[in-house]
Length: 174
Image (tube, rainbow, N blue to C red):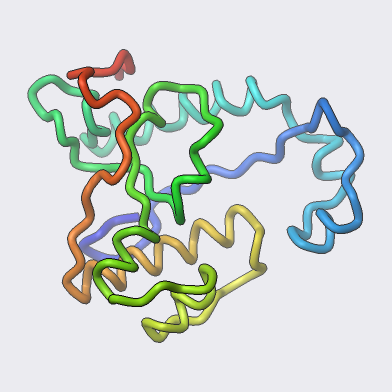
């Protein structure tokens, strides 16, 4: 998402084939809208991570963007991953996931409001959730809308979590 325009400039979306519990529960399907057929025809997690990593490389290179610690001359980067809470990145693999912005933490501090959930945060700033809640792609698009609204309101986005605070650069070549 471009912070100057608020427009989503690129999207990545894949379904992952579950290995440990290959059959979705009715609860999961009702919550997310993901059907058994979608995951049965999905790709393994390691493949999805490799495809995503290559997509990230291509997008960053084509837009001259750098994640934090990716470039020794630009340690803070000019782009970052944003999540709604640290929980989203508790289990991750590629090293470029080692730094991120927990928007929930910044939201609570900036607006002096502790949201009950993500939808409550949207409503607090006058936004409506678009799409289906708990759908990864729709959640991401709504998170992007909230990021843009917060920046327009004057909030400062900073890296809130760094799993490698003493590492100067990460091995993620473009």
